[in-house]
Length: 341
Image (cartoon, rainbow, N blue to C red):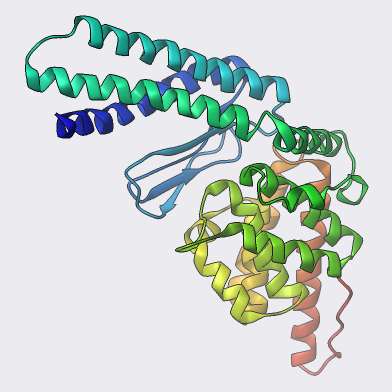
């Protein structure tokens, strides 16, 4: 009987995800959200804007789908409504399914026990997801950091620069906190430090970020941590050149970085190609693509002004260095290195 229950449980998990994705589309439509990433069976797709096409690449093989619904300027209220409306509906649906099967479904030993495993598994899984979200995001220090992140992101949307936002590295360093929430704060800390030119603080943030991303089998490749890896690769490629470290983290998210056509992905790749690989021919292609992507984001609801200014500054910086290096190589002028920001 346990084997039949187990078979039913795993079938039920897929039923749960199918229903959850359908509900995500429906409730997301109401709140203006859309699917931003999806991965299954070693394939991963992602996009920043609703109007963008999905960019597909290889990823770690998994039988369980991973997906993220959202939008660039998602409010706390919209996030709360989307999350808990969907999960309460899941509990009602799968709870009703479980009661029906346990009380009324008596068609044969084999089918009956598979159905019991399926209905019981989906019902319990929906409860676990609700509790994990409730205690992992919307209570205690997680709730505090979640609200603080939202407040600072809203400042960026309203025109503040990265140097003007408040940061909370102490809360981000709390290892008991939700990693996805901590990752957002660490990213804000890094942007703040880079814009201020505080590289000692930046190095400290990146070391702690590195520890957070580690797993027993390597590094966590969840798409929500992508910006963390971009900060590390950029730092190791340019601010404090460490080719071995840059290569190590590049290898962790190679497929994602190489396929990312957004301005920050192209910019990070260009710096890596120029300073780590010593391939200016590749770097100039990537930096031109970064400029094209940045032009498309001007005035959109995807990039804040702070991000736009940040990326434009770094695009111009590497173009200047490449031009100066080229002139120095031809013997026309000495190499001129400006300070970062």
